[in-house]
Amino acid sequence: MTSPADVLYADNPAWADVTPLPQYEGVNPLAPILYTEEYKDATDYFRGIVKTGEKSPRVLELTEKIIRLNPAHYSAWQYRFETLKAVKVPLEDELKLMDELAVKYLKTYQVWHHRRLLLTESYNLEPKRELEFIAKSLKADTKNYHTWSYRQWLLAFVNDGELWVGELDFVEEMLNEDLRNNSAWHHRFFVVWLGGGGGGMGVGGTREEKERVLRRELTFTKQLISLAPNNPSAWNYLRGVLDRTETPYGLILPFVRLYIVNLSDRAGSTDIVDVENPPPSEGAQLPCTAALEFTADAYERQGDDEGRKKAVELWKVLANEQDTIRKRYWEFRIRGVEKKVGA
Image (cartoon, rainbow, N blue to C red):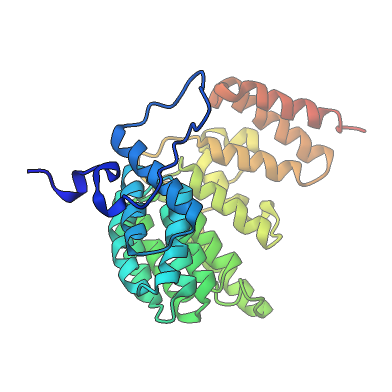
């Protein structure tokens, strides 16, 4: 038996008053897109109601069908939102539908944009519920860009201090599950250094607060580097912390040198180990390329010939032994610095 949902709009008496508009009206394209009959029928009627400006419950049904057939149909999403407001549908009901569609179409930007619009119109926003929903969505894809971006938007939109502080625990949970999750590292940087979760960093705290947060973030990052020395996400975060706070790279070389032990003589490192500088985990693959690169950059930043020469030595090691796939890049770095030596 055919259900109403299976009936084409062209065969549905309830839509007999709408004049469908074909996509290629009066045009004979050389390479037309081959839509299914169901999708072509629905979008023809969608163009028809857009032309007349109709906003009604049946339009919501039509746009939902189009979205389920093609979740990236931006015009259907936008017209649906305008219709929701026109017919005064409770936005909470629409959010329940989005709970399903957001997970089903996780990688579609439009579904998250629609959710943003709903929340900006809602007077009963429950941010904690929304954060729980996002966490649930991330279980389906822990690195999905749209989901993380939406979470950052929500935090900034609500801008509640309690929510910001709670985000650090959430990020740590995500990194405990996968410490190579670059999206989680990026989110931590957003929360600590750009938002309100840094204990004073994101909101321009006192000098003491900033120093405390810097120590905390350095300790946290070093610990995770020690567990997986060749994790580029952690090294990138370390650089971000130092750059954000204008902290010289050279100050943490005692830690970084632990990860290039095989090249300690060439790099001029020592065997300093202390509680603030955790050594690599047992069985770690050393020397660590990221540590070599970091050390070379630290030497170059000294701004003198001695530092530049040490940087060149390490870049040669990277080019010829440790990171040959980027050989030409390291040779480019070498040429740039050699021009400055003795200049």
